[in-house]
Image 1 (spheres, rainbow, N blue to C red):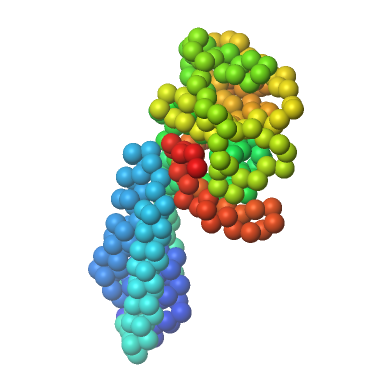
Image 2 (tube, one colour):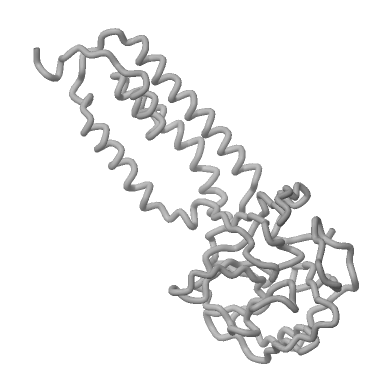
Length: 308
């Protein structure tokens, strides 16, 4: 009998695994190439348009992310189960020209390589963990947040993620205070003067969600353009870092919200814009040092944070 027309049972496990690796590949294994192509298209339509929309708009929505995740899992489950059930029903199957291991491998490579070339930092939300207390009370140690890779329109008040240079693996999370051409003055008392205008501050506020400082701390609401956010000053601690200069082109001036506990542009100077990897958008998980989930912080918007 010709090799291409051998009769052979289909293995349900192999069919399921192939469709798990690549949507629709298990159907091709079962001799249903058209169904496999349709399933593959459906899987991509469910996942990619919402992600592309968020990427183009520069937004991140937990509702969209979780909806895409749930829908993708449901579609994937349907495709895998279909492949398994069809394989079980096929008692005798005449092998076709595409029923070869190397054909499956070629399909995976042809489909997979283009996906590897997709700029994931701009298309998919990037996940980060807050490494220090320098952004308290807006970001607490143990917060996990999504950041948008769309960084071509950075605004004052944005919270950005960056590395100081390509050899420095340490991640920094700070707030943008000054853009290229801005004249920034930071006094010893912590006052910020931007283009000869002091940033307005309101008096003491209630503590933000789950914020429990270990030292006596004063909180203020600072206004910067259309953004407003809570900043913290440890009491009885004098700030020694000051700044009085103009931000160079293609650079930004950043500061931590915890002004007396932040290593920022007052120390290492302005940051090159091309070193920025993301703009923080939303907290999706938070856990305290005591390993307790901070439910009141999940879903907090970082694009335009509101005081409690």
